[in-house]
Length: 131
Image (cartoon, rainbow, N blue to C red; front, side):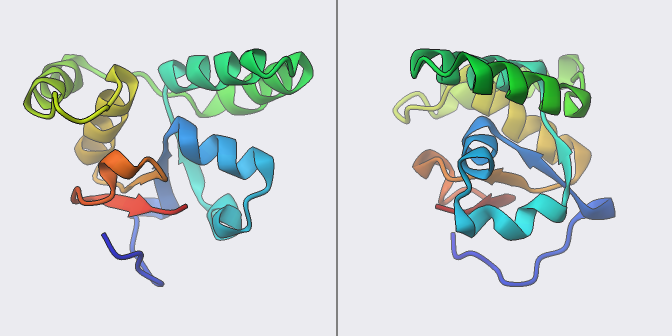
């Protein structure tokens, strides 16, 4: 999906998947403009974020990231669970995690774009793809 220069979001919100949060924390300049958007994510994404920093032995950044992003974690309902499970099954040949399926379906339900750099989502609708 081609990245749009000017895209519309509801109330300036985007769903930030784990990839996007990592890139913002790492200072990827391609994500700089997204720091002004209101973040929505889930605790599942924060688990992936925390785990990712622990794997690189960066305990301090793991703790900082969790503390900083926890306030943006929103709970999803059973409709998202159903749709995400169906999505994961339908796209079983792609390497899409359960967390990513939930985030993508949750963003769709909320009517906002799913911000990611995960290549598995590049061609899907409702995605703001940034590397």
